[in-house]
Length: 179
Image 1 (spheres, rainbow, N blue to C red):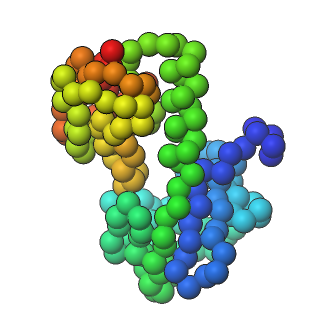
Image 2: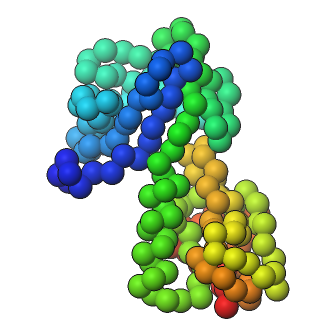
């Protein structure tokens, strides 16, 4: 992917820093290695160990360890190399997903509301028979410890909800039918 085609996917604001850090995935180098760009500089990242709340990794041949102390949709508290940090998340992901969903619904012109991402259904906000407006949240998905609302792509009435709380969905799975 060329530099001009890449989209900024995540923006992180570290509590004590004035400017946010911008990060993007550049390419995969192997099974556990990749190139990431952080604030316009490429870094070689190698994951050594990854569990529920611990990550051991190398960046440009320098060892680092990170432990998630607490995570919410708006911030993450980490212990990185023994130093506690609070990272406020400002995700461009929702913006990218909304553009993607808008393009799909304009082209397809269908009644199916689909999942933009794979994830687990954490809540179902709409129910059969509800009247909805474009942009209303119908279902909330959780993916990579982030919650993303699946929003109605048009005004209408919910004919059917195809998921339940706790279900796992793939990208482009039908979440609901809106007529």
